[in-house]
Image (cartoon, rainbow over all chains, first blue to last red; front, side, top):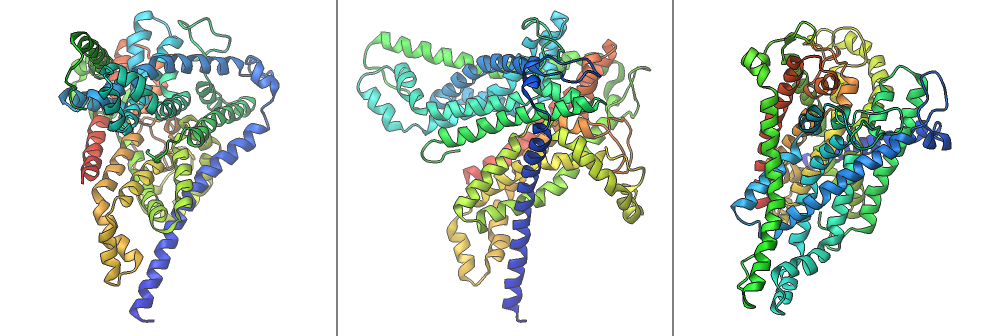
Length: 280
Length: 309
């Protein structure tokens, strides 16, 4: 075998290894999806979605309170986090090419890399300790803080993509700058901003760590935002580490539900709102 | 955007100014959160630093009942499990990225990238669930063989519990793989085509071009991706908590159960028995805060350098 052939063989072998790496990564994903579907489907049913948890030993309990609780906690977090993120991102894109912008961008990156459990401690010392109770509100605040930097940087990216000629056309017509930003720039960038906000919402919907010592969890219907509230990821966690077979099955079913939500948001975000130009 | 000269009179100018100030105050909220977060962690952990000082970081005993608080087992567990994850995920992710940029047709590559990104979207509690019911039994059944063949090294000794450093490292691998793959792909795509063509024109194979041109060119960016992944791995809570074994002990063996910084906070904060206990847990949070800022700072610096180039 001459040297050229040997080099060709090396190439083939190494590329095969690379393909195997990719196959392994995808196998990981499909194993997860398949395993959850397999275990989840066998224990999901109408009663599971509409009933409250039963005490240990009684079969047939549901997780209706966790579904509603998750919707409330995450909804409130998105209501708090998304506007702040969008407006902050708007500032960075339109006026942020100065020192202040640099500092804000840096702070957002620090928050973005912060482990979610640290944000949980923050919400704990900020709300749980002074109020002397676990509350859904403190959970929402923790999730909102996780969401803000993601939405902010995403909004900035998409607002920056709006061509300058559009701004200049509006300004040339005598439109004040604030109106240009709100009525021309923002609507142009809206699909991208919305997609980002949706993806961020799906991300916080799966967050568990900051909820353990803020929203805490609850086996019954909640008593409003200032009291402990059940949530899907927290239910999955507590059921998974419990010693009961029945609860394990319910954890799988809850995981299937959560996974379906995350999948639906991610896939539809890609299909529906992907802006022309393929910007990431 | 450059300052717009005002042509339409002072009222319009006021509107712009108010608008700009309003947006600024919202954006500054983020800065305020970071400062408040740092302050609240520092304030919450004051009790520990006052009574134990920096020795908190290297004492090995953690016993809330006896009020012994040492963070070393958690720091050790976090570092070892993250290092283990990177050890597996870096070659895997870089290989994956090379496949996506050099081998796969554009449409296949796009679809695969989306799927890899989807892997990053899987909630960590679900990965933990998989860990408990699929990975732990698998590892447990493999461990006796590992101990038999590799037992000469202290890394693979001990009882086959299933839970432990090895399992935590494997779960973390799955979590950080998408970050490494996506960022490596991005920087590989940014390698200038003429450089690669020059190498090919000299008679190199495509693989030699990857090794000789693309990877060296993308080195800083890949390193940035690795640091970003490290930041994620260090702070990852749920999946690790569910499989690492939650035992505050330092053992050389990867098969032995351990503990991590994030896991101890998740397990004990809600039921911290005393002010000292709470303060010690918040101190662990403060360490995590400092370490992630440093690691992410390095990551951003490296990636930023590539993007600018």
